[in-house]
Amino acid sequence: MVFVNSDIIAAIATPPGQGGIGIIRISGAGSFAVGQRIFVRAGKGKNAGKIFAENYHPKARHLYYGFIIDSEGRELDEALISFMPAPYTYTCEDVVEINAHGGVVPLGNILKLITGMGVRLAEPGEFTKRAYLNGRIDLLQAESVMAVVNARSAGGLYSSIQGLKGSFSRELALLGEELLDLLAEIAADADFPLDDLQPADYCLLQERVERLRERGALLRRRGVRGRILQEGLKTVIAGRPNVGKSSLYNLLLNEDRAIVTAVPGTTRDILTDFINLKGIPLRLMDTAGLRRHGDAVEQIGMEYSRRAIDSGDLILYMVDLAAGIDREDIWIYENLPREKGQALLVIGNKIDRPRLVTKEALASFFPGDEVVEISAMTGEGMEDLEEAIVRQTFSGEAGGAEGALVLAVRQALLLDALVSCLDDGAAAMANDYPPDVVAIDLQQAYTKLQNLLGKELPGDLLDHIFRNFCIGK
Image (cartoon, rainbow, N blue to C red; front, side, top):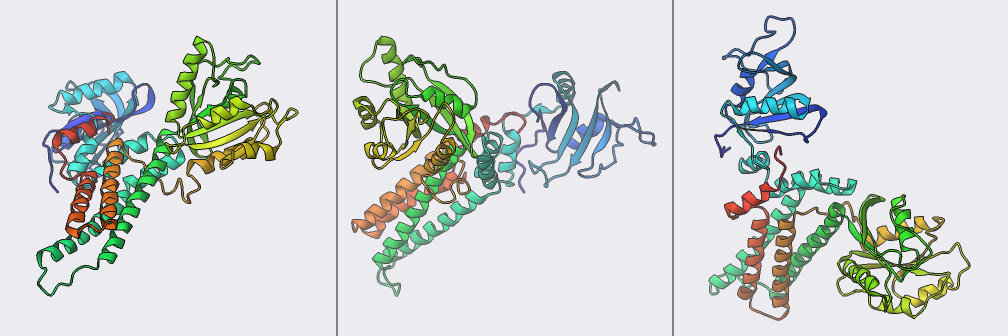
């Protein structure tokens, strides 16, 4: 084990504000001495009211009850304190944790006392950074810490915890081993053409490259699912004015957030809220009604709507079954963006009223897209709608939430680059390029994979990654 820093650091590890308990964490060689100097035990025994003797060794991971005292012996707070020796701690260093009363004043006084003894305040993410640099976790696991903290759903939390346990790291390590084996075989054929080593069978080599490409593509799809679980599926309710978009928005939220009137064009701006639908977080957006023409204010609202639709993951396109399907509905539908891979769900609303469009006719207007009929007024059909949204979220793939990968932005970008290199390698093989040329793409893929695992990273990038963590983590 290599310890990378001799500084003793400290920080408040619990959220700011008032609470029953607040925790201060101290890490580094010498942290035990700091803890022993500021704590006296309570009780009636012979050690009550005394600080630890210099030659006393506190029991590991044992909670001591007493008081935090300043240099003049004044009690600052009632507390529990524990001493955790290296290397079996979060940072792999000696760690002291003080459980005091939560609140700005008591925790601030204790932290001020500690920093007056040569201990410095921890930088954002420094505890996790030390855990990474001391070899307890790899970079992917370190980044999963913030994914756990920021989880928006049970599925996102589950996926983040799997990353924290190292499942993604192990998958990448296996992929890296196969890449290295393939590169070694290609290099051997290139370096020893006259020896007994037989040339690699080109078709077999092509199959191996294709399998690697497919595995990389699967990881990328799982990363997309993880982004949905972590950030929320950007779900945009769209349609012409007065089809019931705001009513559906309120129904899904279970509260009256959007103004609903019989006057077309009431919604002029974008309304956004997060909801959790059957374990899937949705970033739900109510948009202004779309039509070909409108006044100046309507045009601004419609421009906002188009931008929201362009960036959406799922479009809930609504039509009014009581008013019928007209040319405006078809024009809007035909101009919805489909080239970016957005999922689309057609919703026929107002089945509580006399309808002008049958279920069969509705499906014929929008062939190839799933159609659901509801009443945003009475709630009829909402169970079918929710199930359809879940199906659209993961495009019918099995193990959608369970197989998701919650990735940091850095990880997602590098994974995209890795898969692109594998795509290029597979395309080169399909076009009968020589193996040593294909090896260039495979080598680039391996470099991206190493970067993903946190190897060969410049120091300033490492600092940037941990700078986004909270102070006490």
